[in-house]
Image (cartoon, rainbow, N blue to C red; front, top):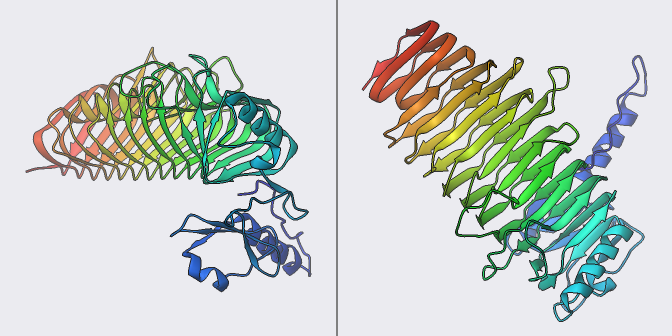
Length: 432
């Protein structure tokens, strides 16, 4: 969605409806319409609006009077006065071109236009790096495939600085036959970075385990949206957002992603630089995660980076260590809510929460279902202070060195409750 601010009526204005009507007009452009292709005539083709056919994948552009296909047969869209979109093929991108030419063409298209369309096809490219690109969307059904010349430890697509950058609907392929340790896309110190509806696959040692680079990586960004992506067969982390030796990070949303077969965490976010006055905010919700080879499926971690985190409504299967993990060091003003998640599988724990190094955090864990698990269903370790744990279904709930905790209304099917700490109370729990 466009990050432009919507208008607010001035206090006492009799013309309050005018800015509200303008807001509705902006929304009709900003919100992408999704329905089957045959139903597109049911929607007004507002100038600048996009219609995505959910059954065919085609994208149509509204010009005020009709929906025009952005990818008609044997034709690529050219630059237009409405919306300013352009096909990357207009700059020389081609399935038949050499990787260096494709990289140059893609870079030039990105730096020269607000909206770049990538037609269906596979384009082998060298690495592409841009600086301070702003207000740019790259979208389409095309596949960008890394050439063998993308170096180890490098990222295939790299955006340094800039704002309002969007990748939408692309496939970004690291080449299954190349096990070089490299990542798909990296945003550095970008304000408002979005990756949505993309498939990202075959990166790093795709069937092994590597520390980095990660497949989709946001570093020191403010305003991060990773939504509705399919990320799989990567050697390091699937989607990562972090702040270390960079600007503080904030406003991170991971939503609706399907991530599986990763070497490390499927989803990871954290900070080492955010303060209590400027905390990071992380939302991890509605994702489906499974089958990682080491570490956790969801993890929030960092040394001293204050944050407020929500981990909610996710489903997870077969984690290596734990499904949902929150572990930060040396924090004094952080909080986490872990709610309504589902996990089935092995590992050390279903949910684990901890702060080390003398830190402490407030934790609320509620409404989660941990099934078929033989480790610790829910585990509170050192540094947990002011804990609420209620309404969960788990094989067991354990606390160690926890301060001021209330555990109530849970149902356990395994070892039950094993609670240790100061001022820890349990009420109305049921063992089955």
